[in-house]
Image 1 (cartoon, rainbow, N blue to C red):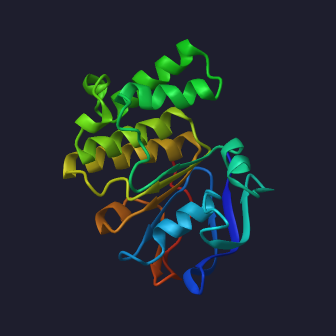
Image 2 (cartoon, helix red, strand yellow; image 1 turned 135 degrees about the vertical axis):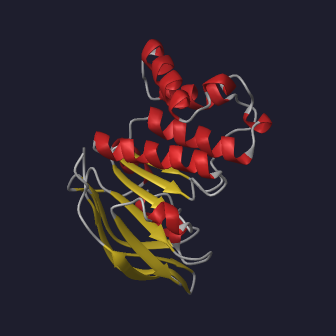
Length: 226
């Protein structure tokens, strides 16, 4: 897998600085949490790392690299294996949980048999195998979060950016999802979790706290041994 590195990364919306310049390096196999209150810049940072902020919306400066290669746009980020799970999940309410995973896999050219196997495995990992045929609109907010994570797992990301992906979960499912994110790191992915939950942050290898877009490293380290 590949390290995720950003140098001098900043995000502005007009005259408003959402993320002040920062450097961050997430090793392959490492799990980083980004913490801070609402409006601290957590989502802007993750969207910038995914090269997903459109120029007409905001301005991103700095360099982002995956595996040593600089990324210029969303397409390059996708080809490098960067997967973003947005805060509102980005799911289509008219698709079933199963279809939400299957459609992107097939669109990427994954053979049907392999795609179906990944769908089954990923929904089982998040505890939703029995809900696979339910429409997204029929699922609770927490279940939708888990489907969005399952979709990311099925894509086998090199870099997984999860924006508040445990916020609507009860304690049991939050623990299950944190364990699943840890499994992605153990597989070799670079994992970044934006969260306002100190208990979730405590499960990661390092924490970057944002305060009105200003970075404050609360702790830093290297990947845990697996």
